[in-house]
Image (cartoon, rainbow over all chains, first blue to last red):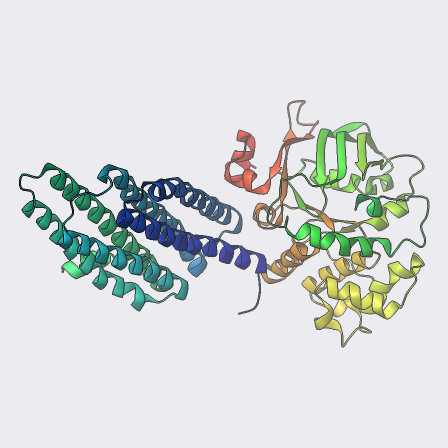
Length: 226
Length: 299
């Protein structure tokens, strides 16, 4: 390979770095959302909601960059696959940002010292760590063009799905007469749902990695279901 | 910065090094704008109501546009829309066509390019041109580059001048061992880069390119395009191209021209339709005629 079309290659690399940097941003946002939830910190939660605008801004930057590359540089073959995949990656990271916002918006509704359930709290903690790890792994799989790392995401995502179901069941079980606790448990079901969706978006980024490397689009979930 | 590049039409000697120094100064300041056109950069050329007539017939009418420093500006449009005519006005090449008459004004770094006191040879030194077909002299590679500096009486070590020009044109490594061989032995792409090097040897400010790649294969075209993107740090470039994709790939701003036939088939008049950041022209043009042209529906 020579260094032909150096400007184009540089520009494509710049946009990819922007998109992958966006994934780093949402990992940070997720950390803050989980901390706000853990500490019942409404102020931090408000910052998370406000910071989602930065993620949206990043989405627009990458989107515009991709349109410009398509219109001006006519990428083909592997380059075209990367550019098309970036459009998906940036959409997924924008959705992860939205899910972080959804988690943060729960915080002020919970009150200062809500009645909690240790089972659920523990599982939310596990889900948070798992979702975070999956987003990071998705980023790594794309950056390294590593389909094995990407495929592994689908396996890991089972953990999130299982914890999500467990939290749902537990929330039903602890319903009882305590209205405050019921409300708290319902909120945790929504938080768990948001974390489960973050995991799905990470898996989707992994699917884009495989597409870039192989040229074939495979939905990991469907393959596992077979 | 503009002070150092402001033209001094009356002196042809002794100022050859100025441009090189100012280029170094401008390099750092300008690199941040490589990816960000359409900001407020200094205008090199200000065209105001520019029109050109050949033998009394209007060829181009009412072109008003500012062309910016350290950018690549592309002129696109169908055949006969006047884009090459306008390009030739920018270094007074039309002076060489007896029947040509230029209306309106062109200011170069704020000075009237068509002022009677302006020396057209000095103009063409500062504003070089590269043509469609590579046109090296039937001389050695070295002599091709050294010719301009010698004629202009440029001071300094000629070997250094030649090497610097060839390096800037990304040609040095390919020809350094055969500088004394005839330039006609080079490939088409190399000949075109030689012509660019020849243009750079006299330390110009602006490089005008009239379809510089239309006679070249895709690999050579890619090399010239990469070179243009390098050169815009130190020079301002205006390119006329039939190849819309080339304009899209390399330029910061694009001007789209059409042929106006409303005055009858015998009166084809070139007009500027839209001038904007290249990104805008190729993703969301303002004028439907631009959209039709860039999408290939007409033209």
